[in-house]
Image 1 (cartoon, rainbow, N blue to C red):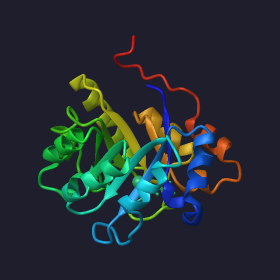
Image 2 (image 1 turned 135 degrees about the horizontal axis):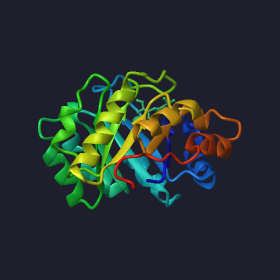
Image 3 (image 1 turned 90 degrees about the horizontal axis):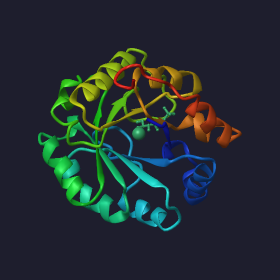
Length: 225
Ligand code: DX5
Ligand code: ZN
């Protein structure tokens, strides 16, 4: 599966969001990862649907919306109407994650399910057949610029096997502390969508940063012969 790079808007200059999105799109990024925080599930408050709606007018890039909010079911329609392409919610934030996937699909968006570092894979086992993407958080959500939690590599690998065994299509996204070196490990473990904030927006040469994180193609040896 080809690698997809999703720069996280959290590390962009919020006073020039349109320029920042256009910059990473021109530099080869496939997605822009939009971190939505509610001040409750995570401490900070970031971006809401009205901002996403304005940004939709200035770019055609895939809007990968990462909801870090309680009660995601109350927010999904606003973000879909604002122009989200993918809506990812945390399984920790709802008792009815499968219904939320159905809601997202009914609004013609792709659905992602996210897991905090402390949440077991079993929380998504019954969801990945219907979800389009599973997001393994490799830092505790809330802030850019944290260190990658190495013990998440095993979780990524187990998820990769779970998806293979179910013979379903589900992208595996990783988010938190990703740079060019860690990208290799994450992709070897089975991730195919890489979110990176500080490593991309903090770089002097954004195109080079994206190219370095994308790296060389990795060949997995299972089910590919
Ligand atoms: C963390 C956010 C991430 C974050 C990534 O809560 O979900 O998307 O912005 O930033 P880096 O790549 O700097 O860890
Ligand atoms: Zn994120």
